[in-house]
Length: 270
Image (cartoon, rainbow, N blue to C red; front, side, top):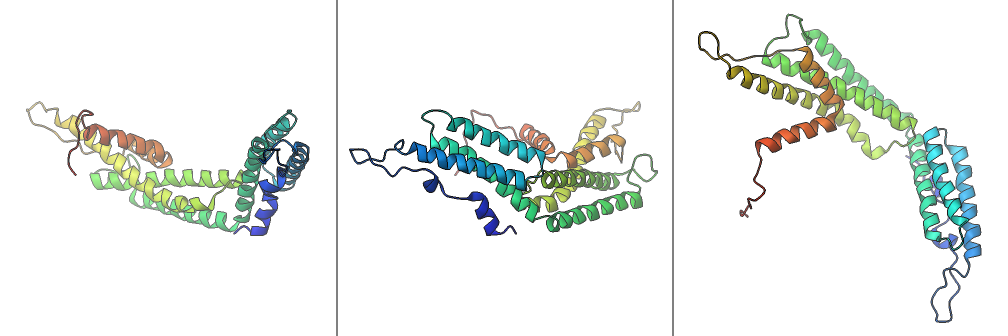
């Protein structure tokens, strides 16, 4: 866990200390512009302090550029006559948020990174092992039947989600913006990917079955298509796990189309 001392060092002085508004107008109200020179000096010094912290703490180009952008914006506002101190502080506070997040992210390295990496790699090995053991790939000779199709797509959906999780893990630690509150996402993401892979397979199976049931053989009998593991089902299952947000939207559209309610209908039940 990041130390409070390190975070306090980044945050620095509170707004009330940086903005000097202790001189009153003749009517007794605070004159916000009376001590603008002192406030200007304080804010300029705060911008310089944060700039030095960025140079000392950041080893990420994206983080450095983001901080430099807001520090530059703050200095530009300070150079404007009649500047608003609150606007300048908003920019500087954004820099502080970037630095605090970076500090916390670095404090979680390497313990949290290693734990999440090992967890996802173990799952990946398990998915691959199951695929190899059960021959869950096209044209394997064992890839027919509904049960095999569901299992195969669940495994491939899990692989897609693990790859997505590993990419996110490397990206967030690399950009120093990893948020420990999102740790459960890395544990649940592969499991959700498995479920989505299986569900997407069932959706495809239902669609193909409805098409086949509407067709008849030369003898006038209906046929039912039982699709096992195909290249298409594997690819779609992998993508379902890899892009879970898009898959959720896809499934949501299907649900809405099935349970579509007339917009003019009012639910009077209580």
